[in-house]
Length: 175
Image (cartoon, rainbow, N blue to C red; front, top):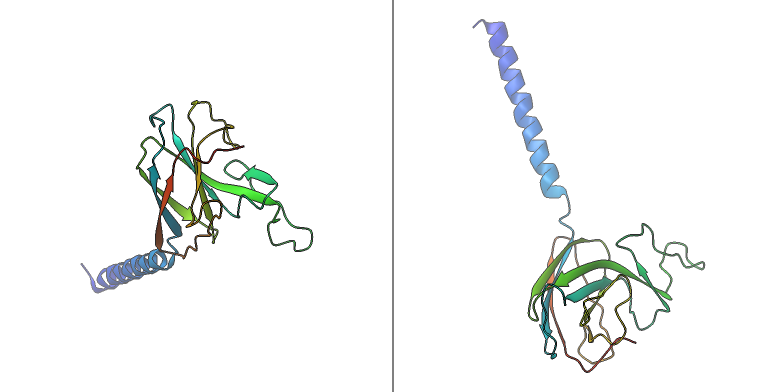
């Protein structure tokens, strides 16, 4: 191999190594997203299985304060408050994610969330007839929070996983 080819080969190898290094730096710099793990603890009488699931909803606001529940799992943009065009309306609660569970004590992982804080609600579909977005009337319901009826926001951070336990039974039901 002559000197010209050796220099050309060395330059190609150098550029390949540099390109590989930049790719690895970009992969490390890319945010991992916000992740939420929800450990269910359903103590109700219902049997949770493939047909009668518990659905965990990740919401962008307190569902008790909202007048409308909007399913963002199939829509593209949240409703805007006319007073502040960049903020969601406090009268609208958006379902950001919906995850099914087939066991009373299952742990669900919800990755790549963009919102923070979020609220978490779970309900047991005792009839097996759930059609999004509203839970069936009379379904056992639970919201994450220390006090019943007072949902707590869950603060999420980029690249970190937050774990919560959502315990509920048959004492609270959907309207």
